[in-house]
Image 1 (cartoon, rainbow, N blue to C red):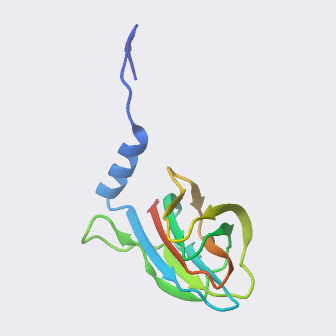
Image 2: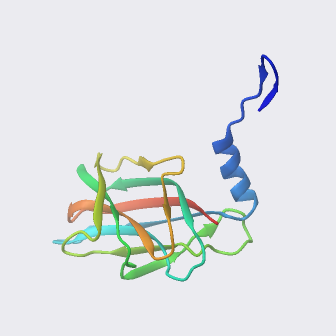
Length: 161
């Protein structure tokens, strides 16, 4: 913001935006753990249901695997099989989110690979930070173990507008 020649004010808009979203009851979190399954891939998805009328903006994604392995971030626009639940509103007492956390254990990974990342066993990694992506209705983001028989634990933080 320019006040006059030589004087300016710097604002940390990213922190302020997340704080305002939480205070306005539009900040959500939900995580899941999908255990290792012999011969199958463990996947956890943040899914914006068709007809939700909302856009999900993903703020952060934290994940850990049960092994040292290359894990994957994938785009998949079909809801995974098992519904864990909707997002918890960070303004306690306010309505739950429309965003859903879902899991599956398919033989082959679902969706389209966006980016692989290296996970050291049981170490939590911030996979995405600071407004990583946006999901319109009918779109989903998956974190997968990247190989068979690997546990995946993932937390998603997002807002809905």
